[in-house]
Image (cartoon, rainbow over all chains, first blue to last red; front, side, top):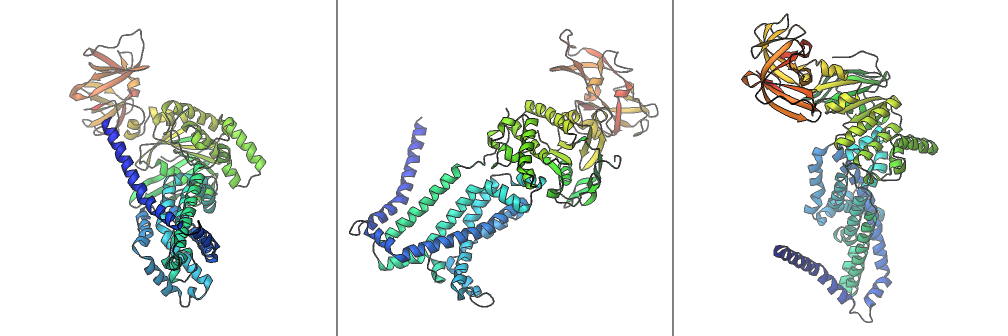
Length: 264
Length: 371
């Protein structure tokens, strides 16, 4: 009994330390953002700034495009690897981890060097640069997106489900669309929101490609203003939490539990 | 080992390799329309690989597969009209029972009224009309497998394939569902291939059983043929329980051998070995009787053990050199079993004594073996 109480105290201690570690800086930022006079001035100024809304919307659109491109690349790849070439899984995992060891600054210089001259002069137009930004973000989000999708696929028996659908006449696109995607919905949403969080906070690639994204805007703001950057950080944090709540709500409706045995 | 040509489902000289490993070797089968055929064998014998080749999930390296005289060897699975039931049920977790059952028909773009009607019929067939709106996770294992069966039948397949469909269920449900599967198969008259490693399942369900070992067909026959006249030592040892006893050939032409110095006779001449050689003989426990009324062959020895197996009492008789002979009798409460150590006479007919090969007995699950 005493041992159980001791482990319970230890658990609460760890929780308290983690809570303080995460929330003290957040509280400090919030507190600092509220010091502007009159009250909430930092927030009203931030919302009144057209560049705030513009950069946030730009990053949201780029984030959505990144999610679509990333899902289009990762889902069929992870599905095929698990179904047909499971031995290649470790290689694919290694490739998806590369963004952790290759700094974004190296990635963006590589992209600029390759795609700023004919035959693929992406950087010559705004649309091309935005496309390049999306490509860069797809690479950056790979570790998170692949892991989410892979975990989702591993939670279901994709081989049997695929073969069952095939035996009933379903084609590959139909199987992916009607069977696989609905059953890894929560994993897809998790990967999507992680990707969105990365895109909203990313600075290096957007800055070097001279894109009007939210990361460079925050950086610029912090060089010019005192309280507004803190307010913008709190707003972006609130948006991220909103996204997490959406994941939790959507995931609660999941019907992907599978009973493997039992009797009535 | 091959069977007659021009069947409804034909597998001809089918072979499948995985790298250097030959999973299925020269497989020939001809199943009639409406026939229930089981593939029986231990794990890794190639039965599931053969089934998967019929389904189109694997392609043979050699040979052909045809259904109703149409070559389907290289057709992808979604273009074969074959229904499949999996060991893991493989119900779509995101769909209700009704939508699972109707999936194949929706893929084939059947009218929604026809789909609704057919789903209703099939749910009636599996006695689950009230579960149409349930999700798979809300069903028991047995119910899920019944839904999987209905789903496979919904598209009116030419051939129904079942890959160890009952092995994830408990014993009582297994027996009940086994009867249901057979009843539905008979009612619909659908050609069915059933994979199992459970001999009782194969023998009780099938019109014919294909016994397989190490990628090869050991024997194709009716359950009675497989059980009563096994073609190879493997079949004899894999199907049912039996005594495998080493014996010395006295007169091969007359089928006379010596066990423990006691002479017995087989109903057939011994072609596997010459006089003086050692052979393995197989005797089913239920063919042997206590006393002299069981047949002209006699073996005497002390009772080593008596075990009650419910309706059966199994008595083990000691022979020399550690060999034993087990015999099964019905459990009759009015008769007292033989006493341990009591020397008894057992008897069995020459027809029950099968010579299944020269040399030592195979290492399998048997009730008695030895020299």
